[in-house]
Image (tube, rainbow, N blue to C red):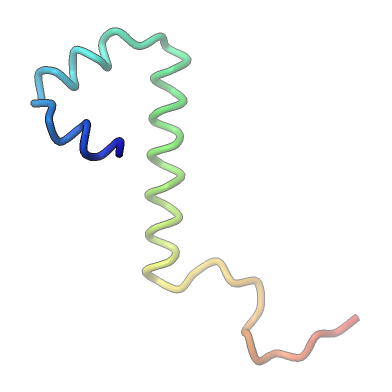
Length: 59
């Protein structure tokens, strides 16, 4: 739903909305973007597993 709304906005509209954000909102948005980008990269590259799936569990 959010993407369909954003698709209707042009660059100027998006920059205007960003300009109206508080510093806290802007940092939160950027932090979320970085986190989601990192998660996507890790998923693409197969990173993030703590152990191989076929490794035996050792207690």
